[in-house]
Length: 173
Image 1 (cartoon, rainbow, N blue to C red):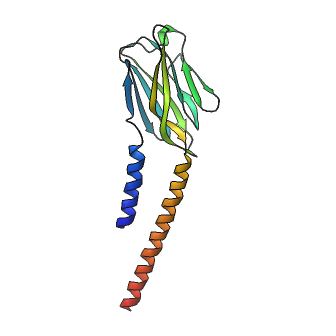
Image 2 (image 1 turned 90 degrees about the horizontal axis):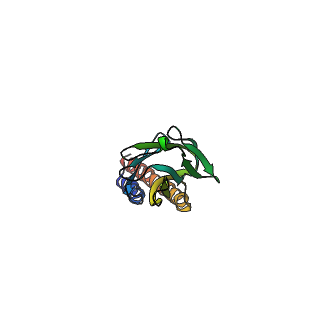
C-alpha cells in the first residue's frame, strides 16, 4: 500500500477507535461488558455486589432479533429503545451472576457508537445510569461526509499513481 494511502487509513482508524470508550464499564456494583461479533452486539450485565437486577434498557438503533435471559421480557419502545425486565425474583440477576442480552445489528446504516444504558433493581436501590456504553447507532452525518472524502482521496491518489507509472513507462521507451 502506498505511504499516503496507508497514512490516511491509519488516520481514519485512529480517529474512529479513539472516539469509543472501553467495551467494559462498571459503576455502583454493576458491570456491563459489550462485545460485537458477526453483526451481533452482546451485553453481559454482571451484578458484582448490587441488589438483584430486574431491569435493563439501552438505545439500540437499527437492530432486530433481540434476545435476553430466560424469564425476561424484551420490547422495543419507539423505533430503537430496548427495554428488558423481569418481575420474578428467581429470574433477576443476583450478586455474582451475569445475564446476557443481545441484538442483531442491521448491516445497512448502522455503526458502533455510544448510548446511555439504565440498570434498575428490585426496588431496593436507585437505578444506575451508564452514560457511555457501546451501542449500535445510526451513521452520523460526519460519517457520510468522511466516507465521501476518503473515497475521493483514494481516487485522486490512484489517478496520480497511474499517471506517474505511465510517465515512467514512456520515459523508458
